[in-house]
Image (cartoon, rainbow, N blue to C red):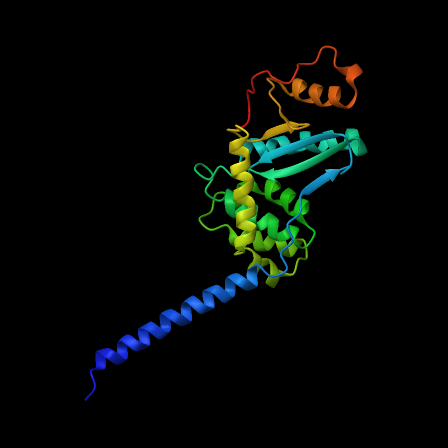
Length: 222
């Protein structure tokens, strides 16, 4: 009689091979049709560029969003605004997954809509152990293809996108969120008036009188 343990071993090996195959297949499917694009508002061709490095689980980032929106409303096609990811995962454990979820929504043309829902509902999803249910709920509110959205939550390409922007932020010397670049230069400010003044001066140099120059210490953002 053949050794039964040999048969058991063969079955185990086959199960492992099958599991690896299915895992690889799932990963490939989640990366299908992924298109990497920048997330831009305002005028993409504007000479004044404001870049935000932000974290969806950061309370200060959520509080700062109305300021960003007011800047965009005020200057319209005079400014190019770009959102980039800087998830501080050591203190915000869901920030990476939230960023990937926003990227998944972006694959269906709804990045900023999802971005807004994440910040508006930050207290809801950031305090639970597993926030995926809420991410799916927001996707449903936006009438996304839920099957595609769920699949792309596991996309390695989207995760690489988020992590590469995190690395980029660190290379720029950024340490907190939200952090901003104005025409490629790190903004440093002590007050909201200084923040707004620097943007106004970049758009209209004649408004620079009385505003703080880029270079003062930042006092908020974490």
